[in-house]
Image (cartoon, rainbow, N blue to C red; front, side, top):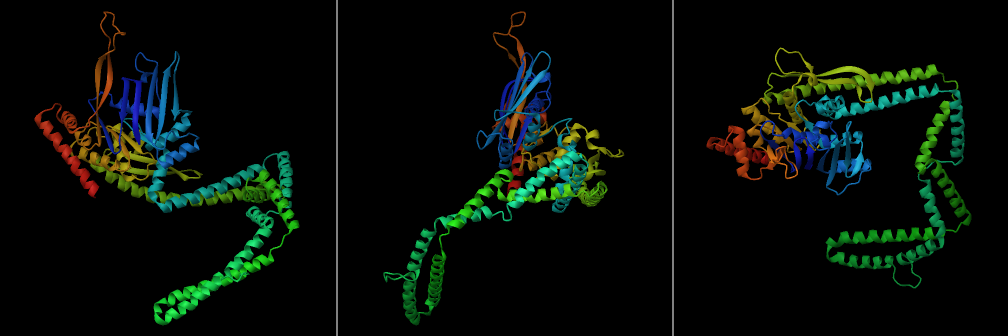
Length: 583
């Protein structure tokens, strides 16, 4: 979740710091007020493309810094990237953009660590999903579209995808074996010599049990402490069963207790259960005493065996240092190189045979991929129906949507190319969504898609730029309710002109432009102070300011009717939240 966004010298923004919260965060303001600049800055800090135009006129350096809440999966991913957390709750991402005489440069940092673009792409996917006018973001990513469809298909489809991955790995291994066989004879002989030596060394070590090291260590401890074990076992025997000084043992005490309970049972049969427990305890003590006595009598010091154990441990440690680091891994390596050595020694196995094996694995891969395709077609039909139902209330009641699944060369994820096909208007043919949909249509499409995939998105923050363009009335209300629905599981940032949408906000920000004087050091040619346009953002934290802004959105001025309408919107939004919370 985005906690804070700090911007310096970015487009019309000189300095700006915004604090966001969970739920639905809305930015409103007149057209051209600078709302999209804020979203552009957020896109930039997450690795989006930038040009020299993002630098504020008269400056050569811009800085955007975002602070995000950290969840356990994100913390684990950052740890894998060797990036330390500043604290357990947040991560700070910054991007510095500087202009030189010939080009523009930028540097991204995560918690102060300089990172490359590839890492920023991975981090962006885990933090924010931005959908703005003219952008296709995740909908245009074929891998993401495929993953969405597979997740929507449920457990059976995911299981089949795992089968395809296993089949592809088997085919890939067969292909690698074939290619390895085609390498030069000199390389084969060099590898043969190495593996022969290793197999002989590991074979001579007689490796069989991955737990042998632990077992030997225990045996060494026992052999090193034979006298102590004998003495302690005899003492335990005396305490439990037979004591040399004729003091009562545990067995004697339990026998005495049994006698007393026998008398007590004559008067109260409820004690029969306790009597049985004492009898069982006495039998157990006697058995323990017998076994510990036999154990102590059988213990013998064996210096020769101790030396054998020590020598074996030294030998296994040497093996682990070379082929481990654990004994289990050394055994697994031994088994693997035995197979490799057999392949290298199999001079009778021709390339033709290996080619036949490769084709057999390929045929199986094609079969399981075809089964995966069938499951995907079923999932696609269900998703098409659901998505069209989600689109209809969003002023897209005539829309046609189809998931096209075409064949491609098989990979670990199947043999399908998946494309979203779309037609917003009656009589128009279906075409790829990313090619035909307008910015507003794309935004509303993704909003509907997110309603279908509320639990499938990894990103904690979803950003929508003017998804309400060209709609009003019930459609705007439907958009507002969908945004509120999404904000129950994700943080949502939304730029809107609709009072119906803005009224649903958990946090409301007003964006506008202001003209300011630069100060004493900046004068025009006639000596007057230089004026500059800047973007300012006001957090509408109280009911009065929110009502005023909603009235402006609704009526263009703070007329009584507009104020009344704004109050009704806020009341309607509050009622909607209460209903959802109770539901």
